[in-house]
Image 1 (spheres, rainbow, N blue to C red):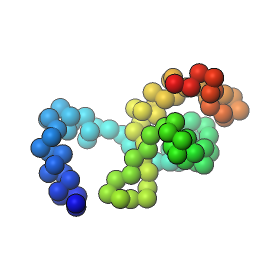
Image 2 (tube, rainbow, N blue to C red):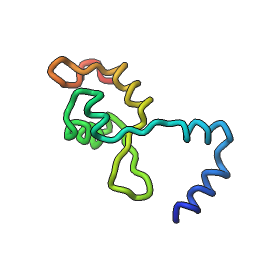
Image 3 (cartoon, helix red, strand yellow):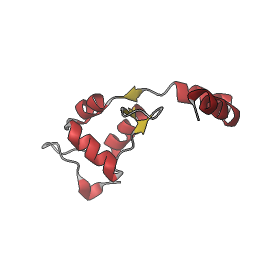
Length: 92
């Protein structure tokens, strides 16, 4: 399946509002997420592997992007300790 087929499928299944919301998502790189969370890149990759935070790869790319709204929500629900560690005692 190529990108044109995928786009066509998405067009058929998404409402106009859903398309607008998808296009308005701000995507962050691994470096931007690490800086925002005050942790290392390897920590963000580890959390992604463990399912703590969700990352997305598009078009079979090896580059992973993170939805900024999801990152912000994660941070509001799961504080990072002053030492840069996730406070797992309240992990949601």
